[in-house]
Length: 503
Image (cartoon, rainbow, N blue to C red):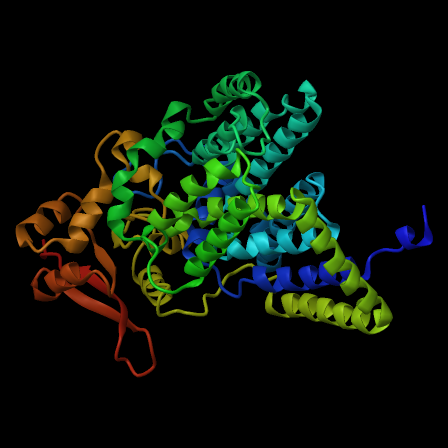
């Protein structure tokens, strides 16, 4: 090995240090989001009581439930209980680094230049920036990347040993984030078939379908069985809530830029005849999913990584151009190695110091934005009521925070599985909730509210119909108002109390 080959690339080191600087800043959570609250609340319940079989937080007790991410929720809560906010941020950071490292490994296995691979691997989590958080999407993406690596290894070597771990990945996914099993199938099927006039990364239809048939039974080996597996096919009412990440892509946004970047990669691959049997199928499918629901940026970002890999590795002319670019960059950086290394190290240390200063070992989260998180409402209720018995109407976004504060009788929280009829066995609470938010009929509202006998209502400003109904009714009184700004011109949420007739 020559002396030049023994030297670590200055470009590679600089990029690595920049990545290590950027990721702690990306993962900093000075205050948690709604998903942390409902996930950690569920994890705390599992830690204290075991596997969740019925919904312990719903106002009606005894309804069956599915907590498809229960091991992840338990781990998240334990990390927080042991290490506080700093632990949660490091927990997220480790997942982000692991997912990026797998993306880098995948590209290197496809013979991409190391520096190009590192750039693309870092770009990959940026494309799913909104999901670098305390939800298990990063872990699911890491499992899909492991599957892609195994399929690519078999496609090159034809050694059966590379396919044997695939069913185990299905088993892990079924217990960590059950509904994501469908994406393991989606990213496996294109490897089963070959297409004429396309470069093929095929494992063959016999081997591919055999792996799929052997893997599917493992999906059902979760604590909830088929109920968790089939949630996907019964969740149509979820879109009625109007969750931002489930709405169609529109206007100019980061999502639009990511979609246009994907279109550019696709057209570039098409022009150079580099589309493989994998990307030729996955790109149009995931594009339609992405256009229909912004949340599908998670899967779309995986396809971007695959297309960046093909563009960087498949065409000799393009690969030579890329390597020449990195060679020139390395020569220039080597001339000022000390300066760039010192600068990168400085930014890395600054990023780590910033992480440590923002994150403390405190055992309590204090939300910065108390106008959106119902901190004041929770404080008032804890002062005046018993959190184990008081019956609360909660919005979709604030229910998780109330369970985190110890309230056990709420209406709804930011997860959908327990509120589907196919899971709870009684009714579609999501559809009922949407009726309450958008109904114009007083009779319709009364017929729903009378079923639950709520003591208090915590309503965000976008629940206009229900706010109007409570304001006009003599049966409820306004207890507390939280505003979005100091000028008190925009209401964030209101707390109402049901007026009880004296005995």
